[in-house]
Image (cartoon, rainbow, N blue to C red; front, side, top):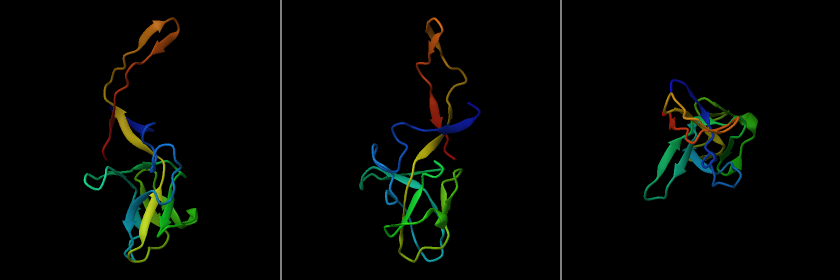
Length: 138
């Protein structure tokens, strides 16, 4: 329980719908104001009447694609922290420019227990029926 680690949820690890490839316009991460160059990666869930935004803190290295007003930026025009999910652009987008992102991500988690139940139902083979994990909210 003491140590956290990165976990890839097989049901939710992309900025897009499952089965598709992440594109630079999947998620809106900010609006340009002419001076701001850093933007936090987020993923939106729900519809317009019950929206929820998850802060993405553990993007997968080299998976992030950034767009500004629909045009994808080359990788040398931005950097991404794989520890915080903050994207820093080389130059500030113009006022009103829409900054978007596509990415894969992991979740920061820890075990919910210090004990794992192992079922040794067959010789030289075991099974762990349940591994409880808790997301670490940083």
